[in-house]
Amino acid sequence: MADARTPPFRLNLGRFIVYAVLLFAVCFYGIPLLWLLLAGTRSQSSLFADPPFSIGNWEMFLVTWNNLTTYNNFQIVSWAANSAIYSVGGVLLSLFASIPAGYALAASEFPGRKLILVVTLIAMITPSTAVVLPIFLEMNLLGLNNSYAGMILVSGFFPFGVYLTYVYFSTSLPKGVMDSARVDGANRFELFTRIALPLARPIVALVAFFSFIGIWSNYFLAFVLLSDDKLYNLPVGLTVLISTSGALSNLPANDVPIKKPEVILAAILVILPVLLIFIVAQRFVRSGTLSGAEKG
Amino acid sequence: MSSIADTASPTVPRERVRAAKRKGQRDTRMAYLLLLPYIVLLIMFGVFPVAYAFGLSFVDTIENAFYGLANYEFVFNDFRVPTAAINVLWFVVIWVAMTMIGVATLSLMLDSVGRRTATTLRTIYFLPGAVTSSAVVVLWLFMLDPGVSPFQGLLHAAGWTYSIDVISGIGLAGVFALMAYFSASGGWIVVFGGALSSLPSEVLEAARVDGANRFQLATRIKLPMIWRSLVLMGILSFAAGLQLFVEPQLMQLAGPQSAQNDWSLNQMAFQYAFRMGDFGASAALSTMLVGTSIIIALVIVFATRFYKID
Image 1 (cartoon, chains in turn cyan, green):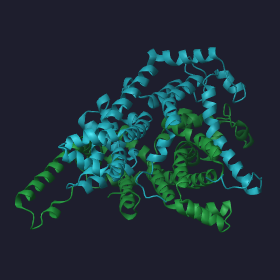
Image 2: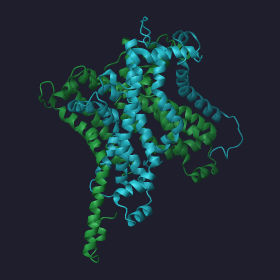
Image 3: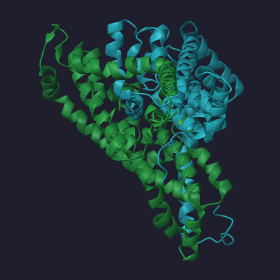
Image 4: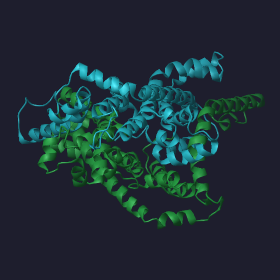
């Protein structure tokens, strides 16, 4: 928008400052990530001796990969599987709960509606980390910590998803279509399944996106609820790898095959799914985060 | 879906009033049915844990007896708690300031350069958002280690040889703020990119005609127009920052000499439950932390009109 009307490129002090700051930010945000992705191919000695952005080789990568995946009887593979189970289960449950709820809040008027909306907003604004310890105390009471079911149930509670769906349906539900479907004899449940759900595809994707990112990268909840290392997810597993091997502490060498390159590769595994989703779905962040918030 | 009162005027036959009433009841039942799974989860993981922790905070969980305010007294008398509170406040102040200034500056600057450049740069700023929780701590422990860091030139220039020099040089609050800013700010820059591009073009055009240069356009016109959203970002970051746990908890990964097990308030609540087995004290501190978050949320919902509730 800006460039259509701007005069031809001229370098003055103002522009110089703008580009310098933007370039500085490129280094700040870009260098760590680039370094991490390249470092996964390098050996322990190369990390210390070679220039920071040197690229290792394929053989080195395979050695690291083998060290990491076979360590402790393929432990990291089962952690990755756990992460997948928690994420898929949690995302499905959060969709199952939040899409109909958001629709009901937007499409009908009933006693208690305002209360549910306000409680949902409070739950959504309260950082999820604030309730982790209370949830632990509760799960301890119910005997649900250390279980797949417990993790998935907690992850399925996603008030932000309800709010996003509510805002979506309150602005996009065509009242005319709903009324004529009603006249044609569709009952209320059919209105939801036949009219609302087919319209809901974009909001399902949006809710799934935010829900997945939250669940996949949740460290605190898994760390507190799970004490059995077979049930750990990847973010917790990553820290266990480091603390059992001392790979980051530059202490005297031990014979655990987990060194810096293996840790780097494990960190890449933790971030890769979210990174790939971010690359294809950046626009979701823009349309979702301030959704419903008054603009400006 | 109008209320029954609208349809029940004296001229409407009685059967139709009754029909409308039945229809209204069926609508209500359907709405509750659709809401049921969510309400179960809301009670289980929103309302109940908070209420349970609140109740537990008045119980001596070791002796299983009513304890009055003794758990709160215990927490306030623990010398580590005020220190942790000050630590967390420092972190929040640094992080919120970095976020407000960094996100506003970069968003406004991106809005003043060509669209292609802006889109590319915004993506680069955004991708670190994928590096969260434990991964961001691990990544930054590498970044702050002069032995392997790509910033080693900078770190050496500052006179730091080992990670421990770097960490004490920057200060723990600053290190945690750096980690949090690195992963959380890019998403906001994308959000404000969207907000800025949807500003009414007539206003911007009018300002240009009146002779505003780019700097004036950014600071006098665009900034006031996104100010409310910036404040919302600040409040949300503040609320999230108070709950800091992961970053200090994982400092032990850099070796036992770096461990910070009681640096933040949430870590203290964790210590009470897991190291001391004192669930009552843990519940008391958690209740205060959740309570603060809920008060902030209530202010956002009722005192501002950021979120649409009708």
